[in-house]
Image (cartoon, rainbow, N blue to C red; front, side, top):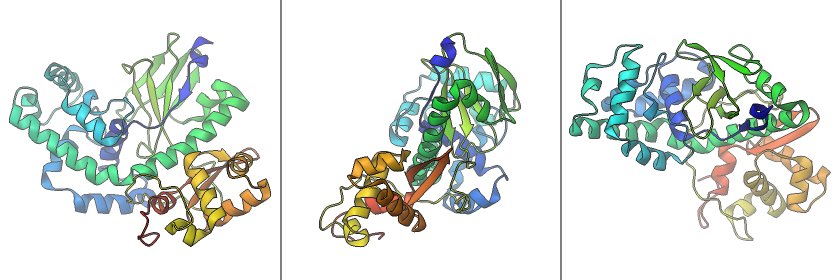
Length: 336
């Protein structure tokens, strides 16, 4: 019971999602959802990206210092990687070498300052191409899934939540969580009273991953589910959009000019409270629930909002396009 009480759902850590993105880039699965993103990413990557791709293969192990579950933004996460002690790099690479062959240069990585700097520059470049432009989309997708999982927990308990994450690869057999990972490793996670941090992942779409050494509790990354999404819309491809600060809609803001004051306020409220229900959205904006539902429907039809359903409750989240409109600076055309 202690394990269940300490289990929670969080947002994807950038390094863990970056590792999943690098794997997905090299994997042929999900061509509809990731095909356009793969083509754009491959066109944008320079030859030096090969260092990262070789160290994070499509299947198998990757050094854990590159896939930490620490929750920070992409830029801060990359700084954290650069601060990794060389002893940790050496230890992680030695562990990977026990399971699979490393690229020849990787054996010198911890001891060659120039090579290490070259690798870090390669990692920065890969992140800038495959992850950072899509970060708002990733956090939006994860927020939708997170809202559904939290309501699953409230209505069915943690055991129901664990059983629904990824039935083909994750099985809850109390008090052990059985996981079949992308590396091909089938293992049992003994929680020992620590509980779990569950992380929804956009790029980790075909298998879960586990970080048993994460503090203060083990982390299980599971694929974001689209089973609860609005059935009227097909799964969207991964868009390459930039995120920035959210601007408050005002009387002269581009967003208000485009949508009108009330609808702009509804979109703003959804962005500030991802996963909110229609009743909550009405309370946030000071309008009636039928009016909130009508505005959310219009925003969804315009591609600015995504709606997930849990039982009889509609849960609203912004799309990357909606976030882009919110981020439009004053004086620029909305959507520019």
